Length: 94
Image 1 (cartoon, rainbow, N blue to C red):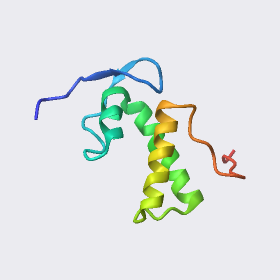
Image 2 (tube, rainbow, N blue to C red):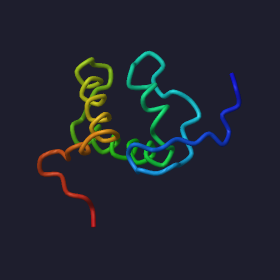
Image 3 (tube, rainbow, N blue to C red):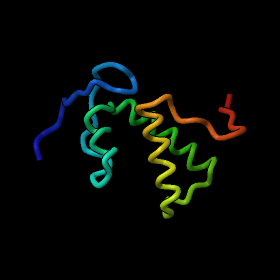
C-alpha cells in the first residue's frame, strides 16, 4: 500500500484543500471511494460526531439493513448535500 501521509483533497464539505482520509472508509460501498477522494479528515470527524447523535436519538440498531441504509443516506446528505437533518424535537445542549 503506498504511503498516503500528507495526502490532501479538495474537501466537498468544507470547500478547501485539507488533509484527506488515510483510507477508504467503506471498501465495499460506492460512497466510500467518493468520500476518500473528496472529504477531509476534518469533515469526516464532523460526520462521526453527527452520526453518533443520530444513532443515539433514533436508537439505531446497526445490525439492521434499514439502519445502515438510513445512515448512508444521512452521510451522503451531510457530506455532499444540504446537510443531514436533525431528529424531530432535537435540541443541542447549551
